[in-house]
Image (cartoon, rainbow, N blue to C red; front, side):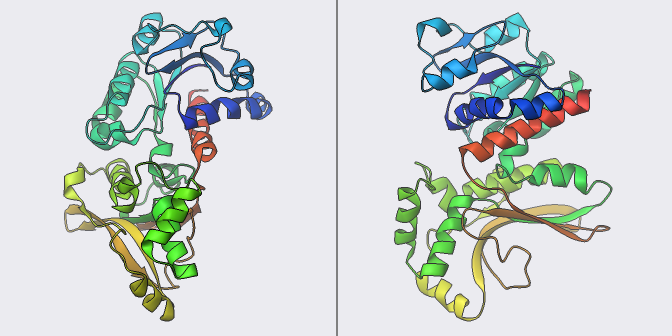
Length: 338
């Protein structure tokens, strides 16, 4: 399988390392992955026989060493012109306002019958239905399992494992940063600012943590689940969003005394013929399937008409976990095409 990687942040670097670590596992599945392109915002490298990933790792992911022949004119158009890969792994930075540049990258790949795997929420959030139609039209596959919770297989469960059932509602704890902060406030009885600062110091909170604590990251993920699994056409403007940044320690401690927890919940549900969604802190008790989802972990609960309630919990947060989710989609697409 020939692939190109576009975007060269933490997840891409973790994926490059993971491809080496899992080479024997992949070999046993009959999969040999040849990375032909690694592209950054200012250029990239290309090798028709496959890039030496061990050389990149040993040089601390420096693409500018002479043997790799980094060129400023290598970009998505090079991939389209050469038409020599089976799959594009799109991992550029998320932009939930325009979806760019990832949206253009994904469109160009699908238009040219190149399978796509992405962890980029922006294009999927804004244009999933159109991208899925484009993929189907050009006999290409679109893997998006990493966009709704990293390692948590929320898309896979909702798409494959509950097939044949009508999904009545989906609710989830989908943001590891917010959940870590709430867990810290609950367990150590500290205020919001102290819990946030600890999350920052441990590298759990991203540089722009506002999207996490204000609920927009959760809203993005629940919106993708709504449009992919419940066939809705909601936009971010259709979701009522309330984050955790205004929660007081006293409220969390009072609920703790009652045996309850406060969690940031994203929920999609059917109300008559309409599909509605919200994100807000909710009080849940021990009977709730997501009660014990603590720390950086995430969880999603599906309520169905024939399979009952099904929950998936775990999905550690981190670059290696996100890279593993990308590899999962690569493998699943390969197996479907055999």
